[in-house]
View 1 (cartoon, rainbow, N blue to C red):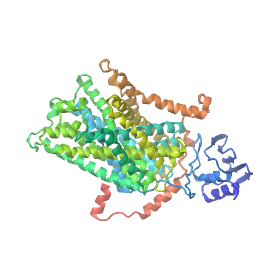
View 2 (view 1 turned 180 degrees about the horizontal axis):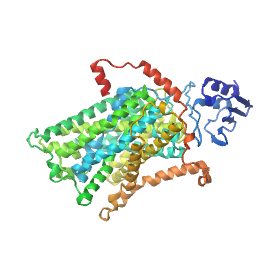
View 3 (view 1 turned 30 degrees about the horizontal axis):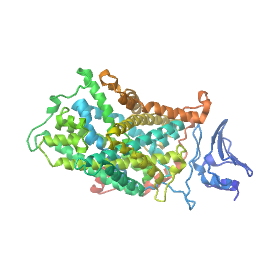
Length: 629
């Protein structure tokens, strides 16, 4: 078959007006198709070009092989025009010539529990104690409540965008870099992709370190590096298995974490009314003495405000990347429109239930100036040793529970590390598919696992070993602190991407084809955007106070922003060279050029098929399970 026949056959197989070219001219070295508005050109220099009116865009993503084979390695239905460059989804071919894709191995219960369990980690069980100590009980509860209102719109808009085009399995269409590349800007997608990847990998390392620290609560006979190796090997093994194995592991991890936090909330309620062994009725005693706010920065009303603001910055670590974990598996779950929509709608309310009631419980059972808590934080005691839940329960005269809670904290760290490794590998694989990382990182095996990305991610997480030495532990903490700011930047990018997505949907008249919309938009996402911009700029405000000045803390607070800007602008310069200073350089796509059509018809057909096969539960038990999961 000639090159012309090869392409003609592919075009004939696609019933897309974009790829239905009417006139053809070709020779051995060159082939061209036209339909009046678009021109597809292919030549022996391995270049594809699409022209729209007077604009020309180039790409050279073809492998070195025969001309007849080059075009066959691309799915022409995935060629889309985005106003800045040609989008081409390259097919990864295995030895049999078939494409390996991410498998749809996750069902509704997996998605629901991954969404919820992935966000309940050491940030609540242990990290909330730091916020309590520095901000007081009112500062703790108020800050978590305010953060929830900021994260709520982020979850909503991610759900809207991913439900619209959840992907076909070639990459993780639910990843933020994928969304940014399609709706906002390629260079910003490049910067966002590496920002997210750094954040995910650092959190894998942080959770493995936390898990090893939890074990040290019981024994220090085994060296800390040995525990880190063990936890890394376990989560690596789970992520190298088919995605259904990962889903099952996260499902049961999440169940155990939810049962634990529910049990702690109930126990705190009992202690509130004096139901503990010492029958001491706590009530809101610690809100009165020593007080509702710690006023560690200054006194008075302004000091109370700063306590809440500092609590927002500290408490945000518990929420970082939570919404992203919900939508990231969209290409790997069955009936993604139904399941991602369901998870998105319920995520924030369940999260608020656990976090608000959880922090309120902490504020009831332990004071912010509790000497055991203060000493544990100063000495950096591992696991349950610095958990406010454990300290409050010990103060109530209950001795056996700390060990049980420590097991829950261990499972929590283990589960979160597992989820973050999954997320980091999918993010890296998506960047490889989009030519934002080495192409070899996008390889997928026959089980639907991006195995190269998993291997690279677990190797990079070995930065956790820095925490095994006193001389390097501060360096590790410095790296992990940067991940919180990376999360803020990610949410800023999500907000801007949604605003452009919404504009494009309205411009192309596609609003009636949105399968999921949320109330209050775009006003709520603008609120989140402004909030996270302010927090990102001022997150190190307390460091600027003369008595608190510390160079290391200042760098940790603000280094991420200039690095991100350098990556973004550097990628722009790489693409445009010195044209970056001219009008030819576009910093974002024009709204009329944003592609909200390519792939939609296939997704809608698949969604209709799932809808026709869906059986709505009729029994009371079935309806309850459907509501719960």
